[in-house]
Length: 161
Image (tube, rainbow, N blue to C red; front, side, top):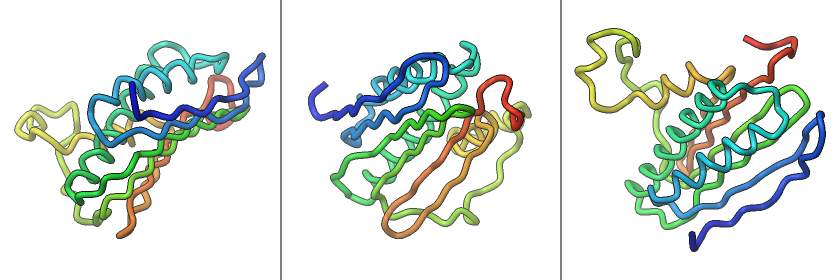
């Protein structure tokens, strides 16, 4: 795919540590690349099972989709940064865009994802999915953009949820 930059990680052995960065054009056709890289990075000796990796891929996909849409709405022609940071106990993923940001307090509260009433809404599931699928989900937003930080702890760590 033309336009994507991937910086490699130092990933060897049981105590995997390293950073993988993707700098992608803000276009939906790059979502599969992001999902693949995040999934493969998480699978490198992290102790995450296939279901947990699938959850992580979905949460990151939601964050990147939101970033792409934010930049399109703002008319910003810049790349979206996706950074996967592997540590001994967890994987941290940051998604950063240059859109105009949004008011977190202004995000409407939707019915729980398992509630039948939730089917009445076509969008708005991304933030709640990220919070539900990651052990930690933090969102920092300003006029200069939004940064989403997702943390997934590896099996057997003291802080695992």
